[in-house]
Length: 384
Ligand code: GLY
Image (cartoon, rainbow, N blue to C red; front, side, top):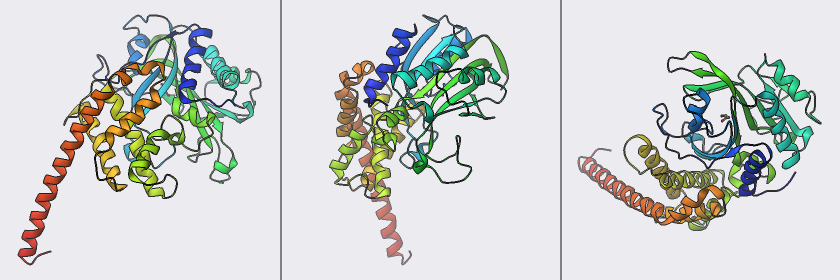
């Protein structure tokens, strides 16, 4: 296995698909969906490409590769509590719009994982949709594929809201018995940390309509999703995504300002991880033109920002601290090809965050005054 920085890993993936496999390399699309009222924010690599899958628009090439910035907040309460939950992540993807299908998607994923980044073949496992004998045969014909490492799973079907979707095949890596739960039934699909899903190949055949029907698409497509931070945790041999070079510098910053060391107190580690995750989300949302507000995307941003401040308070940070977190975020991406805008807008992002931090402090102070007043009145009346 090769050690790679997060930025090197992204580059290796995009170069493999563009230079070796004929894909058009496109920069990440904005987090703000264009002409898609079904989504508040882009939450998957394929989301901005939906019109190419459905045939509504002609793609610039039938093979495209991207590293798409994504925000998902459905599981925000889990961030910091698990090894993998994040609100912001990057999804590496290779896409076919009526061009190649299962054979190429499977064999190129295998080639990238085992030859480019040199993951050990005997540690890789795959899941397939139970009826998908074609995918099973293709997997079995890959060079050095461990023939018994295939599991059939009923829920191997991928969709995100209305739009293109289909059966999928997921690739897992076995991180070792010591990372497992020890249960005799522990295996691929177990909730513990042993088997980590690193890549999902979706055989996009349907278009789910707003009223829940699955309409066959005119051509078969490929949509894939490979989480950059997850894969980085594998090649960097880190227990969680937060310890990779894509997040850890922000933990170090929060640790320095708060004087709280990472790894000594599980509760405080949660706050350090929340700050690291939320700092990336807020910086990149603002980079894409979102501003804190009380509705829609702006509200998502405001909530993330205020959660980060609250976790800073839980670590004992009394002063404003988020501008420094933005500097740490910018340093992570300074050398990355798609993030020139982040560097260019660094001062603007810090300004937006600084104003919001002041506003939140004022709201809190006002709230504290009201609360103090109420408490005084109750006490004066001899009540609790
Ligand atoms: N679009 C496939 C995935 O995100 O897993």
